[in-house]
Image 1 (tube, helix red, strand yellow):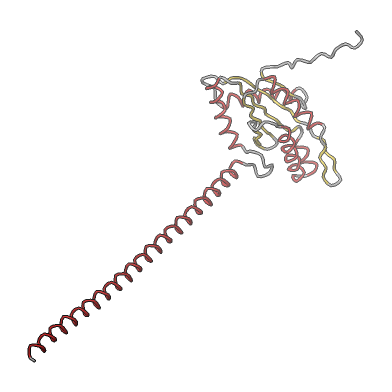
Image 2: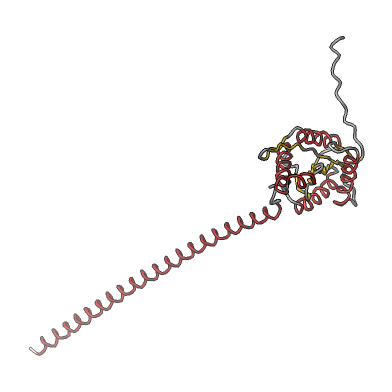
Length: 253
């Protein structure tokens, strides 16, 4: 009897111990799975957070780039006319002179001045004067067909056009086209109908090793002053260029 009790007690103890171990093992396994799930959840949340922050950063960088581009455009655009301003002109002309020197290509510059502009301000007020400047800028811009040609407001009633890869004859032809366009234009303001004209100075040449912006500007300005001294509403090139006139066939022959 004692042996039976001892044997069963040992079996019960072993069974109890096995149950405890199994319970403990099950509890540990459950705890491990919960921890693993929690860790995975934390990792997923962290990854989602990183992705969200990365996306937000990319959006911020895009917005910043767009704002910088807008600021850059605004810094090179004339507020009154919407064409390029003097700052852009200075930078672009210098760059084109370097390219002309490097590639041995011809670079032309037109300097354009509105004739008798002071009379618009004196007789009709500065609002009309501003209107004249805007209308002239718009007309000049519409006549430029190449994306590589740059119209800039040089200052006051004066404009400049940079013409890469353009010789003196080509620049003169364009200048005459611009002059005729403006000569035929009428500006309407309330009951006023204003006629306008411009004088244009032209210079074209391949940049030399020591050429700088002021060389082109002064050469075109000399031609512009000559155009004004000769009566305005004309084009003068420095040095003088004679555009050949195409002969029309004699129909009587």
